[in-house]
Structure formats: structure tokens, C-alpha cells
Image (cartoon, rainbow, N blue to C red):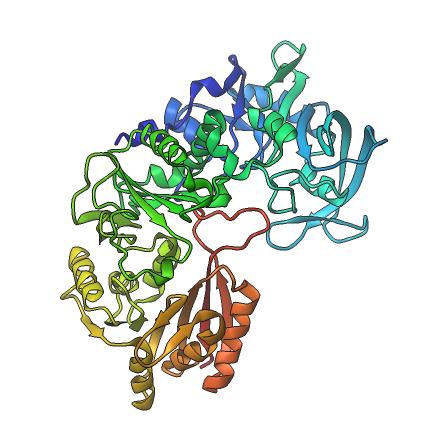
Length: 568
């Protein structure tokens, strides 16, 4: 697999215009103009430097949100900065956008939106009173370009340049941009906001010039057909663009295949969060694992499956493994059925078995053809990194340990003892394999306990054991000879038993993978657990999921995680 081919730094087809002074780029959606993680730069400037050389000068005078596409101006010489900067400061630069909205009132074909904006919560901007702290005036001129039923395509001229200006002003006008999950937009394949043109006096000639980039095909498609949902799999163009968009968003991970933070396993497509419902695609080394959710719905049609597999294989991976997850996958007795999870790849060549991958520089072992699971839950990558960073000199208990990914992270981070508890002897043996691959098996005290986690917790509580960190990541449903566990109703009791063995000042890393449990309900379960365990919590911190697990508009992440600290 050629990662430079799958994740090219820059595509020269994005260039709208360049001369000695200016570079005008039609930035695709999914590429930020400022990297969220400086240690893994994926922004347009870093990618241009990667493609054209680190000495190439690039002056930044404007920014577009990651998921906004369109015209972006950069200067190529310092001498051009003065003229361009002055034009931006005096509002002599005209920026025209197009946006698609689910509805726009009749009779308001041309309006001017004047608001004052200030930072709000969770990365949002909000409309405030003019006298409010941090308030800045935002002015946007709106013109209706086209209507199809209730839906409308709007032209926006931004006279000011505030953060999220068009997005927050239209949302305040009760017409949030389609695909805008942050401000409540209607479902769409992407954020339907595009910078169509920019106009200014050229810094060398003084001649006023306009550069344009047409809106991508998703705008017209959504305007006429709305959100296609499952129907995207029947349109080769839209399917290809959706996969291309998801891959583009993973550039920072895709290029991080060596060095201290090498990561060769991550999610490439995350269902509705990437506008591809009921489809998840994971990369392990040079192979993809494709997961189709539900044995009906979009995947009842075999032709759709083949179309998706063919399109994914065309990325240039070495092979593809398929997992079909039926609606009631939790009730399956045999998860290695060949009709659900073929042992052989359905495209390309087989991967090594076992296969060694890396996560944030840590080697781990997976098996791609071993039933519905591979041996590693990729959505816990950020939590395992957190464990590694806080584990130095601690005693760590990993409950429902599975193949012991958290234990390995703790060991690599310097834990002096780990205890991995799981009812499956086979899973723990794979945990030993992971610890061995990381070179940690003999580095400290590592215990692998093949026992029901509920029973182990009860015994540890009776013995008044205390540990620095406890990891609690149970399945949503489980049944043993002695008990039945349902996360929605029983999690607080389980967390209470776990908190009872956390020493003062210690931490409980609690996770639940259940779409029906909201973040608020999960937090309340932690406080209920603390009361039951008669401990006081100094802090309960919500933990975010990795960026390669975006959620669909209106939904929350399937994985909820909190870090609860017991008061000293």
C-alpha cells in the first residue's frame, strides 16, 4: 500500500491561480487551515510545504473552517502582504459564499443579517447583545439563488470575517446550513458551505480581479434530492466522493506510519458521521476491514456491497476483510461464521496472521480473519494514550480486559503493576501476546486473571484492596451463570464496586459503548456510584473520542468515557 498515493500532501488540481505574488486554492472540505494537533499537522499550509518544500513562503490572510470548501488566498512573497492585509482590514476584499439550507422564508430574497457574535460553549459561537463581553459585529448579505421546494441555495457576501460567521448567523435566522452538526443543520453529505469567489486588487498591478471555484456536486444533488441516506450507495459519483472525503479527513493519521507516534490502525469511515450510513471501514496496516451494520437495509442488495468493496479496493490497499454485523449481533453464539465474517479477504491478498500494527508508537497484535472482532477496539485509542500518560508508578486494574490493550498502555507508561481481569482465557492469552510484542511482559508485575470481573471485584472489595487506576469497560450486555448485566440499568452498581477499590487520589476510567446511554445519563451514573460506594469524587471529566469517529448530525458518540478522580 502506497500511503503517499492514498493520502497525497497536495493535489495541483486544487490550484485556481498562481503567480509570483498570489496562490489561490480551491480548498476541498475536510482539510483545515490550522492543524488541531500540531504534532500531526494536516492543515493546508503544512501539506503545501510537504509538497512544494519547507522553504516555500506562504502568507496566510484568511481561514476557512475544515469542512468549508472553496477559494482561499495565500501570498507567495512577503512584499505582497502589505497590500493584501490592508484590503482585508478595510473590508475591500469581497468574499462570496454559497450555502444550502432546508428552508428560507418566501419574500426574503435579499436581506442583510447584522448580529453581534461572541464565543459560546463547546466550540460554538453565539449571537449576543452588542454590549456583551467579547461581542463583535458580524454583517452578512444574503441573496436567494435558487429554490427547490422548501430547500434553498443562498449566496452570502461576508462583509466581516468572524469565526463561524455564516454558520451562526444563518442558524440564528432559523436556517442553519445543511450538514452543520454544530448548529443544527439538516442531514447532508457534508457541510454545504462553499467559498465561491474572492475579489481584490492584485498587489502587483492594482487591478481588481475575481477568482472563482464552482460549488461541488453535493450542493446541486442535495438541493434536488435532499439527504439520500442509504441511496448514496446507488450513485457512483456521490459514493466515490464520500469515501474520498472520509479518507481526506484522515490525512494526519494516514501519514503517521513511522516515528514515536506511529499509528497504522484507525477508522477510515465512521457510518453517518462520514455520510455513509451503516458502513464502517478500519485500516490495519495495509489492509481494510469493512463492517456492514444490519443484514437488511442497505446491505440486503448484494450489488451495493460489491460496489462499495470495489470502490474501497481502488484506494490501493493490499486487501479487504468483510464483517457483516446483524441487528442482534450481541446474541450470536458463533461470531466466526463464514457467512458473516469470512476468514479470507474478499479483495486482494491475505494479511499476516497474526498481524502487528502500531498505535501511538505501541505495537499490538490483531487477527483480521478471526470472526467479527480483530482483537482491538480502535475507538479507545485516545483513552489508551491517556492511560499511558498517567500510568507512571501506578498499580492499574483493567476489568473486562479482553486482549489487554489498556494494560499494555499502562505498562508502556511505567505502571509498576497491572492486573488484567477477563472471563476468557483465550482473550488473556492474546493479552500476554500483546504485552510480549510491546516488550513489557517481564518489565514489571503483570497479572492475568481468568475470572468473572463481577466476582473478582467483589472479592477485591472484601479484601479492601486499593489501586491507583481502575479501568471499567464492560460489554453493553453480558450473561453468566450467576448474573445478567445490562449497561443501561446496571452500570452504576458496577461502577460503585470499582470505585470501592480506588485509593484516595486515584482514578476510575469508566467507558460504555451504548447508543442509548446519553453523556448526561452516564455522568449521573458516576455520581450515583460514588454515593453507593461512599466515596467523594473530586472531579468527573468527560473524555472525547478520537477524531476519526465523527458522529452524524443530531447524534452523540456511541462511546462515552469519563475519568473520575476520588478525593484525597
